[in-house]
Length: 578
Image 1 (tube, rainbow, N blue to C red):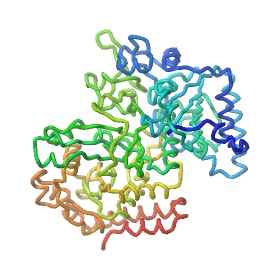
Image 2 (cartoon, helix red, strand yellow; image 1 turned 45 degrees about the vertical axis):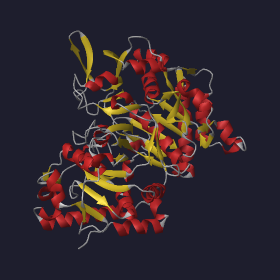
Image 3 (tube, rainbow, N blue to C red; image 1 turned 135 degrees about the vertical axis):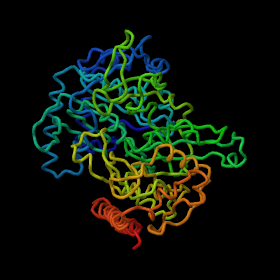
Image 4 (tube, helix red, strand yellow; image 1 turned 60 degrees about the horizontal axis):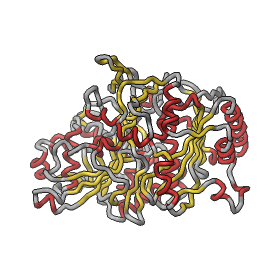
């Protein structure tokens, strides 16, 4: 399935082309805007003032795919104050009142006029790798922003690479995506968010256009594009997933018990720093999977669940990962294509990027998906679906037997912000709610609720993993939850080795049984049993308060209040027993 050009989508009544689409389309069609491919963008990026060449070779397979010159090396694009996403810079055009829309349109036209005073370039890509879900996209920016355009082509797929397959696809009732970026935009109007310097992500999700102004960070272009892709999937009845998913095949295992599990898929939803990539990409779950298994990864960050056809489809051929845990010598460096905000060192005469956040937090890299080993462009419907929480009152693992509770826990997913985001120090300390771990949602929350309800009703089982630590004596005095423990729990779920009992405090939830856990993780039950917490009265008060916060969050969410029957089901499920 393929998207439609502006003309094809609106040709029955061209007067319905929205102004943000018309402004973007006019710039795209300016004959002075030069179209570039990945190799041309790479050469322009090398000349960019804030880009440095390194001596780290680009993964040869990726370099060949992109048409880069032999011996091409990784580029390091470094920024100033802002090295993460700025969610507060988003302005949703369709939610503005009429007078504010007119003001913003005037500011937008002025910004585009300023852009046109500089040499501009554009590039085309295909978002999506499965023939049944592809969207054509165009990005426009200045020659002085070639690095972001090059990285965008790396992150997605240059149009020419999949053109033949795309052109044969049937058409979706979706417009092509357009991304307009200008790093040097400045506007001191307090209507626009200013933290570090003025920034604006102006979104029209109904016509598949985003403007990124004043934003150097590549994650804004990537997530802006994915925001529109996810929303497009929602528009055709799929579930949007800011998460990772993989298939484990047990049919080659020596163990008869493992072999009978067949193929199982498991998905993880969480923000950066919650273990989403670690759970998805781990080679063998820390050695806890049985001998003879095989693994296929769809992606660790973005995919779509096609509920009707019971498959999942991927959007990107690369990973956009933090590199703080990838020091020199880590084997992942073989697969690097591009890096951002890295310190570099001269190592035996070669300038190499150092992936340990020495220069600033949130150093990032675009890494070829081959780093995962075997990977696919579509995979099975998820039998197991996991929310990754940062709530100290929750044990390391919970299973949900009530669909409404599973959906509600995802809708009120509790976590903490992280250094991948451009927020204040105070914001970093707060517990926040990010429904379904997707801070890029631009449509009504009830649509996600409806989609994930269908996922559970079609056979997925819901779980939550706590990735922050479990209450010992207070909200700050915690039992750590090692990643190895969580990976082991994942393997036990996949092999159906756990026995469960109802959690008396939360109807519709279950915890692993003591005798079962002693066989696999001795001491687990005593350490992580809610009944064994110190300061039990304070623990219970805090637990009740957390679930009251969840209910309050959902009750205050405008785009759930319009569906009172859905809201009532969710809030009813979120109650701790007295």
